[in-house]
Image 1 (cartoon, helix red, strand yellow):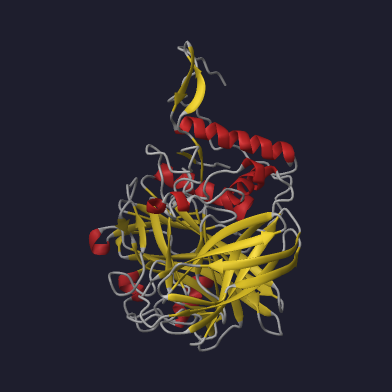
Image 2 (cartoon, rainbow, N blue to C red; image 1 turned 90 degrees about the horizontal axis):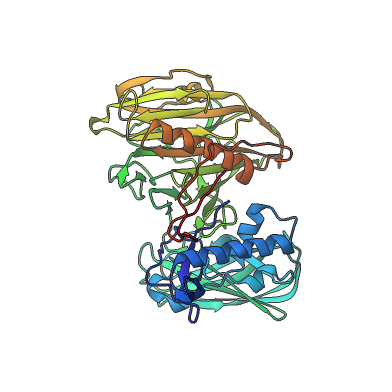
Length: 536
């Protein structure tokens, strides 16, 4: 568990001129300007993030002392959730200063109400769960209470947007137990001239007794895609289940693609779910290779969203889909959650978690869930694909061995039998991707594992599952990018560890883990003696 820290001026919360910043690269800030410290011959005032970092570490120690049962992740989250937003003092860096400046008093106060926006839903006058020009939008803000019970509180939203008018801006919180969530109802109206893709930024202020808590969220007009960004890796999530683009890449649709170190490697990606030849729901190309199947819709009242910081990773996305537009709907609710972080070792992958619920009154049998990705690594689409049976992932790279441009789709959940297929696009998909091919590739076990110098796609899946009415299964995948085989292996292992320990809902008790490696690094830039010896 890591918290990155930046430096502020202790008097006014302004970001220090020398300190780093970024939408996702710095988690919290602490004073680091003119800090009074021991110095050869006496004391001096010195600047540096090396003084901010110990304050954050010290606060972690205080939180652990005050709440000894907290895990490392709990401590990290409490520090993040109790920090004070400092955008007001740094308008030119608004939205790029993490959770803000740490607040030690709030972090150790057991009565401090830690409230976080965890989900949004929309009921707009257009009926499509999308914010459009000139319409009234009733929307729900779901807030969750962490660590404390809350009663008799009131919430208010505010904004400073020329394209929005708030009609209902207050909502009561009559009672909320620790760990529970409540829906707060608000209403706003957009102007006729609101631009496509315009981000409406809201502030949620909650007053509970003597405490005032603020959280920040946004809604995007015409929002059919949003983009994750780890600093080195960017990809979009959509309202139809596609990943990277709302359709095909190559300028044919909206979205970022799957961009790693400035290069886009993706043509098409998305989820595929089926129970038989007549019941496959997906969002990728169909019998016509130039058109995608369009089986998923955003569930009524739901909204595509990305939160930063999230409660498990620094950036989390969410959308709830239903397969109501399929020719033969299976009858599913699919909650897609996406997780992206900026920490070294974790910023080269994005995790997708699918919680799939049976909406029918009868059980669903023989359910298979897969992830399809059509990768374009080399010019001319002459790529090299293989299957890693140890790490359960399909790998595509620019060279048959080694390689400096590598992507992979990894199955994380591993709750049922695995199927995998490397697909030769020019032969197998040139005339479209028909139902028989989709079902055979989705359910046929380990099939074609290697192709060289071809235009390739990969499909990895697991199943069969049986899902009872109102019950759910969970399936997870990681989309990974790397510059070497060694880096790919590290990211694959970290993604699996992250899934097992942080994201999935499996039992984590009595599960030992070994460190991947041990490293000793120089204690730069502030050695505390002319000569320092470190042993381990």
